[in-house]
Image (cartoon, rainbow, N blue to C red; front, side, top):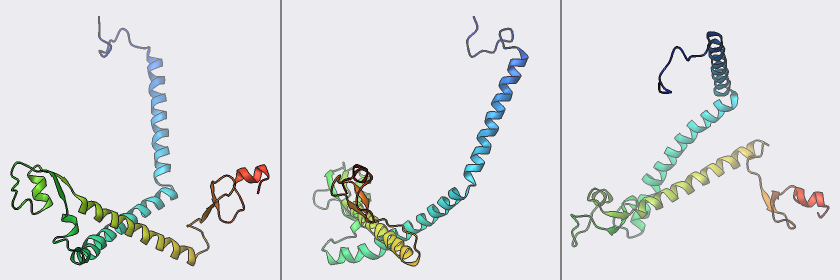
Length: 181
């Protein structure tokens, strides 16, 4: 008895049916490929790609600002004795741990197999996130002041249904439809 994965000439479909299946598969593949081309080269996708490239460059710039400019003076102002990125706590020491000296760097502790809580890296990333968020908000505010296209949409809570609505309306869709506002 032949296995399902083995090709059996005698049990194969007639030639016309095979051609029809191949033609249908070819049409589906052409439709898929042409749809992908339409999608990939549409205006919105190119704008998104351009925005992502700019965002990547902006993120690198902000990361450098935080780690190279902001955190070193913070490490000097606060008595940290080392750079903020190198702050860590040893949760479980590795086999070569010395009780007198401990670990000098985060990399040394990780190479020794110690379990560490790298809170300095986390704080650095939090400051980086806040820096990117504030800078993007500043750019959006600047854009909105130069053009009349609103990027920042200010909202308030509807006093009746407690949903966030535009600050330009008197109530939400639900309260207006109910005749409450």
